[in-house]
Length: 281
Length: 281
Image (cartoon, rainbow over all chains, first blue to last red; front, side, top):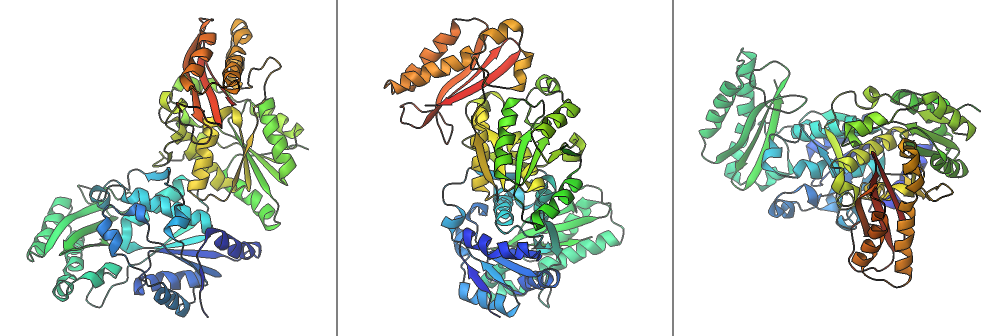
């Protein structure tokens, strides 16, 4: 089967209208392209749940606080469509920037609370851009379910909050992070690492495992957990830790005293590449 | 026929699911209750267009900047349902505040530009509250069309902008303002006027007509149009004009030089009651 490539909103709606009349369940996997095994896990889950699987590819300019980062997202659409075809995606929605933003946008979805800490502190406007484009994609595709990776745990929390608060008629399905054999969380950014950086990158996950182990062993102080994990990373000067926090798993706000369930989240620069990861604890 | 009263989101969705399968068109008329002939015009238009007409009654706390104003909105639900029954409304969605806001809301829809002037200047947060609750209602009912009165022209512009920017799958239908024989625009607030205030209230519309006539006669200066209309209202000290502006009809931002199409919009206090009105010019 070849996935059908759809570039416009109007075609997308037309193409899905018949599916809806036939009461076929629609699943959406929103992506920024450069598809890898992490996306494959989202697709496989959607394929198992839904009769029609739509994958969107759109590098959303309004969620980037740094234009260099935006420019680094290059898409090989033919390659991504081939990837989708192999995994049984029905429709690939790949609109242009002009199609998604025909005029400067005036409307933004703001999610307070969950957006404010972690990446929200370091990437001003990022989650506003994410929430807004996800609202647009959900309104265009109107899926019954939409799939997001736990690797972007704060994004997941922001979207879950938005969907609940605005009564959006969709179920948000979280899918566990996919990792390389050495523990590095899959990300399209990994390929921008140098060979040397790639070798030490798994330390990020190891630091999180160390922190989670410390909590399992009974540590109740978020500060102590942070210090331990950050010290571990500081053994290698190549890492510049942006944040490493113990947060409430639902609200994504930092906690002082640890009462399960929490999540430990980290963002660190390795050379010119910003990596994020997180684990439950 | 008696309109069916539905108090919960889950029942509303269940009740409409079958209509959707049968491809029946759904029209939504969002209101804050205290229904009058202005609402009747919205209902009649929806009844003519759609196979299923839903009217929502919800006094939305998050759009009120003054609690006294919120408290003044009292609903006689039985009376409103009777009104709906007479006009052939199928479903009356009347959720409680707890049903709409089960926990403090974290997500808000912000519409920049159209929200910023006129009422937006004097009622901070008002249009954020309006856009957010309308997004919720549209997500709960998923209508093909939703009906809004032109009397609240800025609200209409904000909602039209939101729907376009977020690709919401609904058509927003504007319905002309309904007026009393003496020109006063219908509003549930009119019944709070004293007998004396009610007598002079139509001057608001007369001031707008005066301004529109001045533009028709060739005046291109928004400042001159404003001055003329405000002078007319100042003849009666009972009026406290909040704003009277000539605005771009789509963006609702004030213009200096008049090039059609514009809208002339006014807000004025008459005793304890704030009235708004507008006309095209």
